[in-house]
Image 1 (cartoon, rainbow, N blue to C red):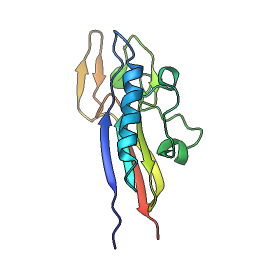
Image 2 (cartoon, rainbow, N blue to C red):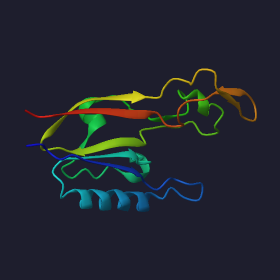
Image 3 (cartoon, rainbow, N blue to C red):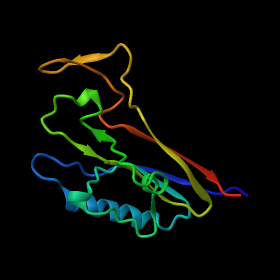
Length: 151
């Protein structure tokens, strides 16, 4: 008999110049995990816009953060104005782990997680106010999560 797996994506409230929206983002995360908690096997991922400095630790409550579980001690910055050349020239120097996979798995196990989209798209560029810059797949690096069914 097969096992069900629920995969959910999100984009939690973004920080804005008017405010960091931390209270709303924390409430959204807690609400989502509360609703998903009834499922046995869940992968909840996406642009969480999460910043431990302003938001505190992610409210895991029995869930696992795939990056910290599989790559302890590695920064996992998916938004990095120093590494993502498409963001060079931004007035803010930011390195944040905004994107995550939060998992609750009874019948599956975490195998691997990798950052993707860290290479410029060959032959594409754009001009900002000062210089020609390469185009990356996104302003965020992506995450690729590998899980497998436990035997």
